[in-house]
Length: 154
Image 1 (cartoon, helix red, strand yellow):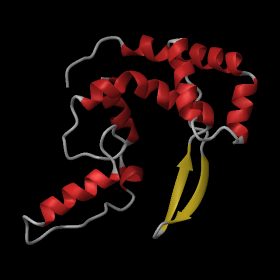
Image 2 (image 1 turned 90 degrees about the vertical axis):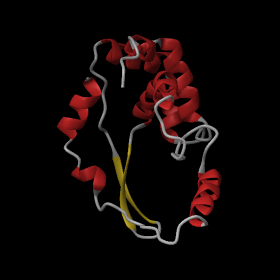
Image 3 (image 1 turned 30 degrees about the vertical axis):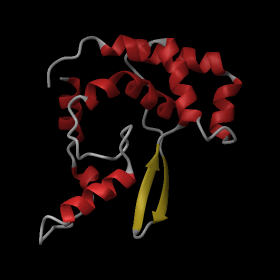
């Protein structure tokens, strides 16, 4: 993957962070964390901007809970300010990352989604006699995060 230029400054831009708030809050206006963020909106935008400028965002404050869908899974949900940061990153990086994605990747992509994935899977199912279904147990937990972050920094 080639370098895309100085994206960091674009991510840290206050207008980008404001847009990120709107995206992160969509459909969640009644949630306490969204209400709290909005109550001191400009100060929270300023705080996120300053953390990014200092290259020291306050991340990692997760809320853990379990779901049973269809099996028991531990979910760790980022705090609302961190979700705003996620959207700020994607506002800038999505077009760059999208240009490298393969056509048959459907999750979390504009113009794709579950229904298109199902149609494509049906298309493939009609062409092959065998398929392999697998799930790598604890995949994310098994990744060496130091190596992952080093790769992201590069």
